[in-house]
Length: 398
Image (cartoon, rainbow, N blue to C red; front, top):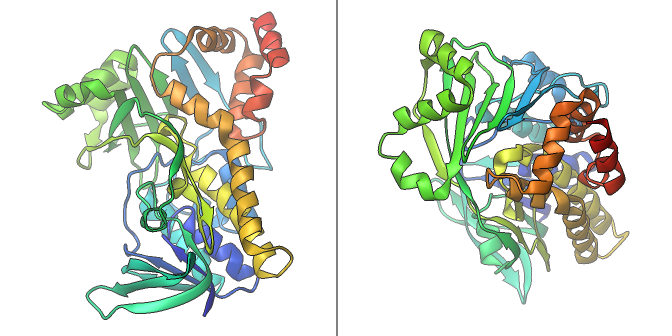
């Protein structure tokens, strides 16, 4: 009998398992993949996400790996360009965008070191119920015989298509349709800062990752999907040339694409019911927003810790377990509401008039730009940044 079973061992699952194990609980962590295994990702870790790794004692391992620090960002909307970086946040002066084949094993090793029992290559086939309460899982490793494992809570950290969420019938209670698709790949031979540049109905992202590679990504509206796929490479490079011609020249002169293109139509932005009798969802399983703001990994860390705190209250008997987990969901929803709406809006690649005016103010004054970079870092909240008084101050400076 485990205290918790966590399904999914990536950016949300490994941390929540690790944190519960560090507090003395018996935790089983399962994943159908075996690390290192790649997955579609924005890669980027803001300072508030790195701060969690630092608190958990894992940041030094990441920094010591072959991953390039990022200390300058260039963000633009059409002709308005802002460049700079956030102030140090909890002593962190750089950010990183590691490949998931590097980051996910670090997280999984952290869980193992905490005493988590890990089963890779393990597929959950069904949940076990007593009445309406989830009490465990049934699954197998490879083609082996299925086993049943029981726990006081089962946590689904298994992505936007969550098996756990589907098995408990967790409904989506807020949704905004996805507006765009993404294609990306990796180049060697490039030297560049972090770029997130929006042109007319298209976007380019460029940032150094790990292993000496640079990620180039493009976004376009969903209705251009079929047309784009007729010649992915030519259409991809044309978007780069349209928005960041200097980087396009570098790609042509010195760049070497090292991997195939990866493309994905984004799932809709959603909140899914994330708690019930004996179960909870964390990470993309319960909450997914447009990847254009690149907050998915950092948010997974924050929410994993928030869930671990509430689960501990329940497992220790300080509060009823289901009640404590319900409070995790309420806090998550409240803290992410503005970021959820902002990401969905920006993901349409055409800002409404009010946001376009604000972006012009960011480009017009360095103090405004610094405030925006501090928002990205996690030093201020969206509610603080977009408060009418702060917006008036920025417009006054501009």
